[in-house]
Length: 461
Image (cartoon, rainbow, N blue to C red; front, side):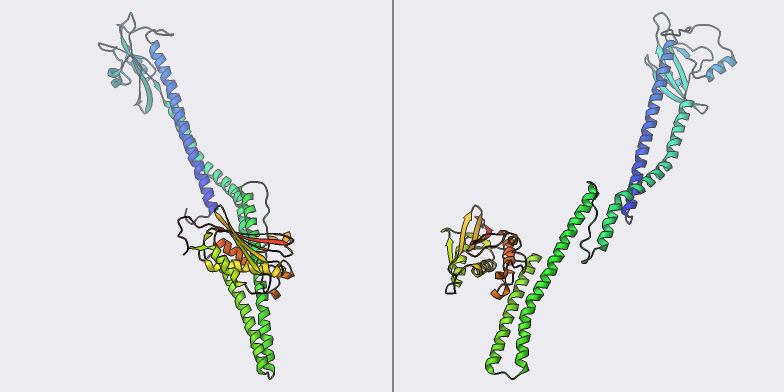
């Protein structure tokens, strides 16, 4: 069936199944009919043979000496297979008596012996049986039944079966084509919808009717299109936001260099222009670096953590970086026991710095930002807490979206691009952990959960 369409295969399989079932049913019917008919004939022959010597109703005369039949009578009687033929155990049979099945005479027993012979183009069922009455000489009885009617019945049934097969094939083909059309109609609708959908028509949905496999297929297709639509919308938003973020420093560069080139400038003015350009270049470099990191996270190409890292030392190093900076201060509270996780140290440091920077932007100057680390079961929890105004509940679930800012406090003028928490979430996934945020007015807690390194992992030196 290679190269056939699915519709053609379905019709062909349906027709083949019908033919196989028809043939099997026909053969079973023929076999059953033959078996039952032959059993009925055998029972009739056995009963007639038993009645020949008066062993049942319809008692007839037994064999004995007497004049033999004339030639015409003998011929007529020999042509009739139903006439009983009697043969003594010993001695010769009556004159003119001819056995239907001579070979069966020598094999006969007191039980019925059945055989089928062919004579003059006819099939004859023969019973041969020895009978020993209590007061008469024993004889072997042989009589037959013409199977002409039976053979005609079998031939008629066979012809009907052979003639019915093409008709059954036609009906199966038509029914298969109808059922295939009904069954594949929703699939064709899905195919047409998929062919018509592009990035401008992702709001297309298939109608869902009933609760069967095809309706579930349509529902699954709709769910897939909804996911694609969401993905495309996020990608469009991402590209628009990235373009906007890059346009801002490029505009600063263009304005500054244009002003510097449009007139004679002093060395001090030229230096200031170069400082502006350098600052804009740093901003673009930082943004591009963050975008590349997120692109690697989306592609699944971030390195898997394999190095054991004691998080107590990492936290102490990060807190040291903020010593001497303007408030708010950064304090740490870490359990006094090894907190070892398999980690990419640079990426984990970046995640922690992003959390601390974000907390310092929102925390009052007189309230320190707190870094905590503790172990709970097979996880290590890194928590960064600030005393800022809090985050409204409707914003929390979207904080890890790229370029998303919950309020003006998260604006680029404070140094943020709206990518920090997205990077933290990507690093949590990279390490097989989780990232979550809880917030109430005056207390926002960002928690990074990391799995503990296996016991067989060597401790960091």
